[in-house]
Length: 244
Image (cartoon, rainbow, N blue to C red):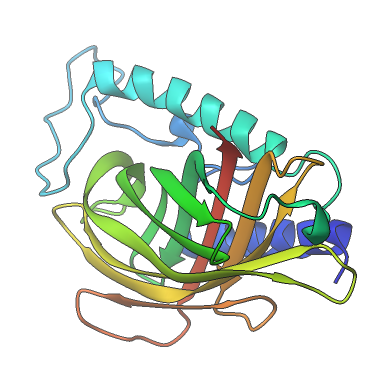
C-alpha cells in the first residue's frame, strides 16, 4: 500500500476511534482543550466541588507542559516521514543507529477510552538488521468514572523487541517490531501487545515511522482493559522517531 494510502487509512482510523471512544481530538493527537482538570464555575460564581477520581490527573501546571509535549509530538510525527523510503542498499554495513521520538496508543471500548503519547527510543543494529527499544512517560486523555475527559499520567512501560529491517521488493527498507507492556492511569489498566510495520525515511534514514492496529490493515494489535478482552475494542499504535 502506498504511503499516501496508509496516511488516509490511518486518518480514518483515528477519526473513527476518537468518535467511538469519546476521547482525544483531531489531527491524530490528544486534544488538551477537551479535558477539564481544574473544575469550572457555575452561573452563581461559586466553584464546583472537585471531582473525586482515582485517575493520575495532571495539575494545571502539568497541563500547560502537556500542550508543549503534544506540539513537539506533532512536529516529530510530520518530520519522521519526510522524504522517500530509504534505499536498503544505501545502509552502512555496521553500527547502531538510535532514534528518539514518540509512541501514540489509541485504545478503548464502549465504556473506557485512552489516547496517550509517550517518549520512545529505538536502536537499529545495522550489522544484524534488528530493532529494539522502549517507550514510557505516557500522558494522555482518559475518561474518569463520571464520563469526563481528563488528562492523566500513565504508569508503566512498553517494550519494543524482536524487530527486523528487511529489503522489500522495491529495494527500500521495511521494518517491523513487536510491542508489549502495561499502562495504568490509576483508574484503568491497559495490557497492550502487537506488531508494528513501517519504513525508514530519507536518504540517510533520518526518520522512522511504524503502525499497528487491530483492523487487519497493517500490523496487529491487541488490548485488554482491566483484565477483560471486550467486544468492539479499538487498538492502534504508531511510532514516529528521528535519527539522533
